[in-house]
Length: 285
Length: 83
Ligand SMILES: Cc1ncc(C[n+]2csc(CCOP(=O)(O)OP(=O)(O)O)c2C)c(N)n1
Ligand code: SF4
Ligand code: SF4
Ligand code: SF4
Image 1 (cartoon, protein in one colour):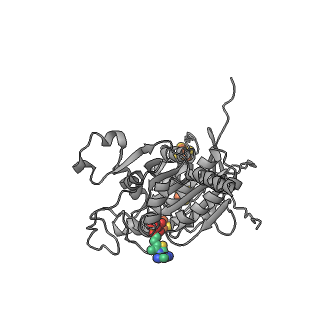
Image 2 (cartoon, rainbow over the protein chains, first blue to last red; image 1 turned 60 degrees about the vertical axis):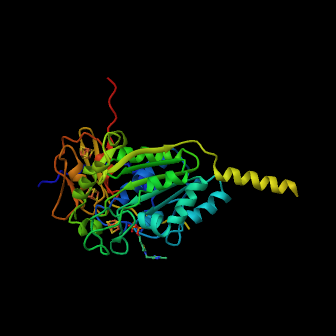
Image 3 (cartoon, protein in one colour; image 1 turned 120 degrees about the horizontal axis):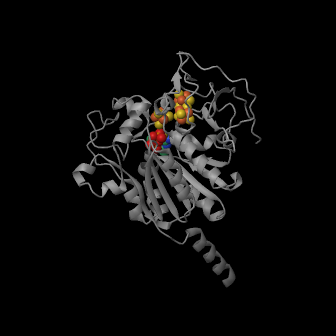
């Protein structure tokens, strides 16, 4: 191949995304080549930028896992707490500082296994935050154990003959618990991904966005789809839109990822109810 | 704590529709931009970094930029001249 000659143009161009990153010795980031986490992170930054959310009003929180490394790279308020406890810690922030735009990110293990209880109850109370669950179908950081979302018959280090459990559906779980906004997308569809993050950020109450993302290094290798391009193609091949899914039967939908908005309703934010209560009690004394 | 920003070198390639900026030190050679580019503009070199191999057909569609997990490739569209 013959690479094109570099232009001698002196440029004043500086990428918008880089201005939101802690662009120091931390870069390049730790994620593997072709990992989907960077794509979700990019979409989140685009969404925040387009909605003009000031950095000072933004909090990105996480627990533990590959996905949970994300806040470490964002030049805004961030924290990184115990495995599974990000929603609980973020609840504290939202109640103390309801003016903050709180975003919590985590893997399927962090949010649905060890943090599953927090997930249900944060959704139930409709605390005002955007929760992004990055579903890569395994515990990637610790080497690829089966997670609550590993599909039937797919491989994990703890499922060497294929998973026999039925996976949990994060969107159904959040809808059942009463979340105000519930949607799912994949890293293959950047435009939808960015749009859904923007919608989630502009709603009230608890908003869940599940993003099916590729983990080529662990999940991909264990399932013989080791390259990023093959894994995103695999995700794309298993994706159907909510409209298309309505015309399909349960058997056809068994191994499919249904994308779209499942719940979008108005609720009163918990932090508002909480502030009212504080006022009432203070006035009574 | 004040952030000490590091300057990463950038390669600029001019195309009729715009400019492609590549940060070789950030690129991990994952191939995603190469595969997703609809016009076969990009390819991985022997150094396992992305390079522009077709400097005329880029349509500035941003697919490479959006799908790069490493924030290593960016597109700047040229402004349309008023006619
Ligand atoms: C209390 C506790 N238990 C177990 C661990 C070990 N551990 C670290 S990351 C992780 C799983 C991460 O999986 P997931 O949340 O799906 O994130 P991913 O790495 O896939 O992005 C586990 C079990 C821990 N750090 N803390
Ligand atoms: S192990 Fe998987 S999820 Fe973790 S950084 Fe690598 S590709 Fe991404
Ligand atoms: S902007 Fe579109 S056409 Fe141009 S290099 Fe990127 S993906 Fe290819
Ligand atoms: S997507 Fe990014 S990291 Fe991957 S080859 Fe292209 S420029 Fe490099």
